[in-house]
Amino acid sequence: MREKIIEKELVRAVKDKGGIAPKFTSPGFDGMPDRLVLLPGGRMGFVELKAPGKKPRALQLARHRLLRRLGFKVYVIDEINQIDSVLEEIDHE
Image (tube, rainbow, N blue to C red; front, top):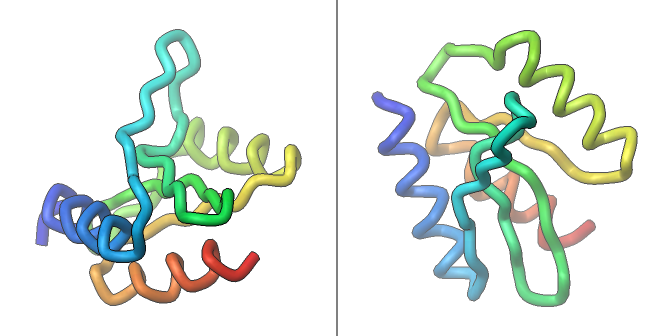
């Protein structure tokens, strides 16, 4: 399964919860997660999407650590069946 399929499913699932999942780009600051997940009630998380079995690169892991130190939730999804539990966690933080 390709990363794009997982990404499309994430966007659909977030929309079904009444939220949005815009693509996140940060020119000049590489390694940031792929999507912001913004849910009703001001709940948010960063999501890195990977093809099944693939892992984030070292720079991506460094950015994830930075975001977590700042108090943000960061998730890595590499299978469609992870989406619901990630959204549940973001929705109930």
